[in-house]
Image (tube, rainbow, N blue to C red; front, side, top):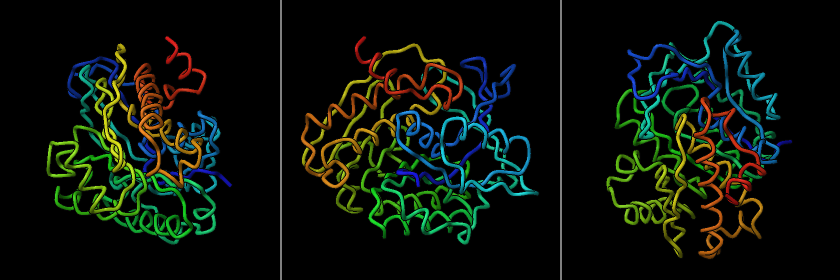
Length: 323
């Protein structure tokens, strides 16, 4: 059984091959496997963690491509369901040099939204040490109910819970629904990673300290991290807070840098001395080291078109840190 499980969206990203043009102006797109939580599953596998992915794809060529991509990257797909008669979700992405994302999703409905609660295997979920989830699979039913069931199974079994709100407002019927469900699953998490551009929507403040204190106090989360692109990240575990500088690189494709960050951060927590069980006891030096490693992984993820091909190995991260 995998040590780490991720649940959510697995889809095809069509990434514009020209930077700083709109989707309408883009002359061409490169096909790549994507989906935030699926990216984390691959990122973990590339970093040496046995990982698995729970989700749904269409029983068609795009779905076949996605399954093969995960399997080629040694992610367990025993609970990735292919369903006839539905289509794999597509996302068209315009790349921008400032790191912002212009994304258009094609779902009608997408296969990822059709995962049912009855398709969640309790024993499989409860076998994992680490469980990672996002908010995109909460945007529609039945995948919302399936995700909530899996989160509850994992929490009951004592898994270490990782959450990336990963705000994609165009997926939701209303902004109010997005905010409600983003907060509904916050209290299950041990660690929450959010991006700077979604911070004010989620926390109702642009201030990182005040917003993170709200998540720590109201939701009982043990560690909050805000990624800030090339500017690095902010962290707060209630005892220690601070900033860790990012790395200046020539960005090829910013998509998925946060997913690379999350995978690297989780491996560092898993391998720290009692880290998963003693997150609140991590000292500032430990937190700074973890964040620097994760920042390096995020920077490396921007170096190729498509997230999964760019997700780094431990040797690539170590070599990058040495330079």
